[in-house]
Image 1 (cartoon, rainbow, N blue to C red):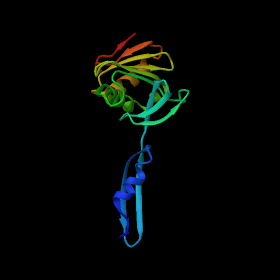
Image 2: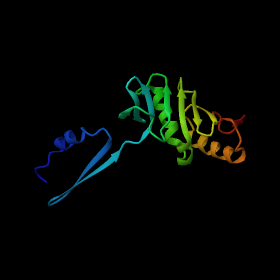
Image 3: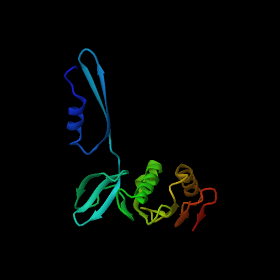
Image 4: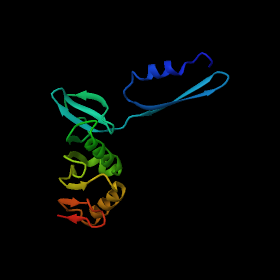
Length: 163
């Protein structure tokens, strides 16, 4: 363990873009545990090179010619690294797994106008990323009460608007 250099471990792990964070845990006399947290993709960005899978921080994970199954297309003003992208990422990560699985498209022109499209044809006006957990709960409740809704606005989660 005395010969293990933390900076060398870090340098070796930087070559793997799927690693979000890591932690080293030394247990003398000879055990070293490396705990790794993988990046979680939130969707794809379309470009001339194809479809680039990205995480909430905008880190490119892979590029393919076709949209990977189960990944929404992201149309975000300013692209990865922008505040608008961060807001869209927060919204996507706040969705329950069942709704996240139905997500086909995310559009955001500003911090306050995130819009979701589901595979069912439903359009969800989310608004800003504020109160995303409450908005998720509201959306789930409205979907149970109004399963045939074509649009739902949860930008004000206490007063959703159903169309």
